[in-house]
Image 1 (cartoon, rainbow over the protein chains, first blue to last red):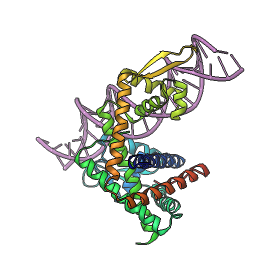
Image 2: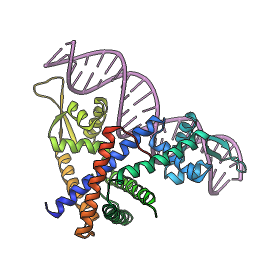
Image 3: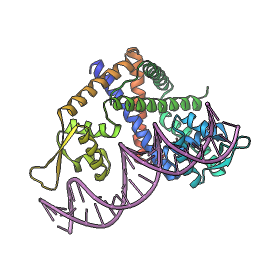
Image 4: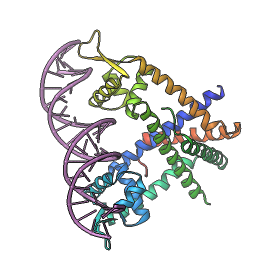
Length: 153
Length: 153
DNA sequence: TATTGTTATACTCTATAACTATA
DNA sequence: TATAGTTATAGAGTATAACAATA
């Protein structure tokens, strides 16, 4: 196998990994009554503590209108609450409920468990080699994106 | 840094890589008037040649109704055609247009270019280490999915 | 009776634009 | 005048269920 072909194979595997991880997460979240987008919001809230919708819109990089919808869904399913912001009557403060906090914490544990599961079969040397390559690929991709912004399927 | 922490960092980087690749592809496809889902269909068509919608539904793992919508979009934007199936008057045959075929071919080239860009800075040894680890991670994840089907965010 | 694709209906994520209430 | 969040509108992706035409 030539270099180009081996690189193509590796890229294919990276893309497959991305798809499998995404599908797996989507399935797992659905069991909790969550979607990927709503979980992303819950996650930011878990990290930042109670926040205005404006802050969340900037954090997630989506429109304020979109945040309204995501918060609507999370309120309806009991993961967050919407309360008047003390001090700015235009704003609302979104906070995780107990259920929301417990769910986010559990997801942290499950993520650690997944990391363990994926990497525990590797030898120290294998893991280091993988981690080094990963770091390089990520750096290269970040550069490429800030430079131009183009890719294939 | 302990093992658990290093594994957590690596998983985080894998997830970031997945997100960056997805965003990058979405942006690039939008310039061609395509979306990820429509491109996936065009791609299958490019590989399989003219196919019925039923076959495409099975190939993409989505509902026949969804294929109707995706094909509608691709017909409207000139990437594929819908014709009566000779031999089964229930079915329709979806085929790539010249534009569709050219676009798919160009995407193949761009993909090879991306692989080159991501991996060309690595030494032979680095690449091999990364590819080995990637193979292991993918195998482990596939196992996990067929076994149960659970993960974190 | 089984299969192919459609119409009908619904939910989620996403965006822009116009508008309300407040700063 | 500027900001926070909403309503209004729109498009894309996804699903199930009912139905038509054909096998």
